[in-house]
Length: 141
Image 1: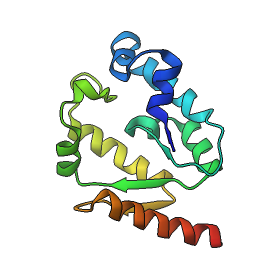
Image 2 (image 1 turned 90 degrees about the vertical axis):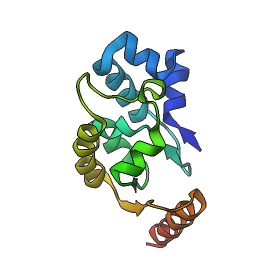
Image 3 (image 1 turned 180 degrees about the vertical axis):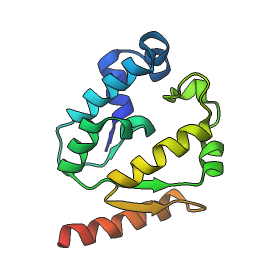
């Protein structure tokens, strides 16, 4: 299991929100794209941050090394799960609302996804079971 947000923090020796505060969103997005595009692994689950989908090179790379899953949630459920955005290091522009960001990224998630898993009202265990079933079908191809 690889958490790309942890890789970014490891490389930069800073928390995500510190990178955003110090380098701005464009700087953070460049770093995130570079880190995600350079992940060298096989037989791993890679969890990316939500803004990874903004990095074209990263998404092409991730698609090239495996299947991309879009874990789909409604806006309301996402908002509830995220909580305080300032503490999470969410890549959101000044003046942009979470709803704006959700609507901006949703088509990108759909574009890059090999599989869409509806996570609404499901436990983590249920989501993982669904992803596992889809992946097993993929490797049988």
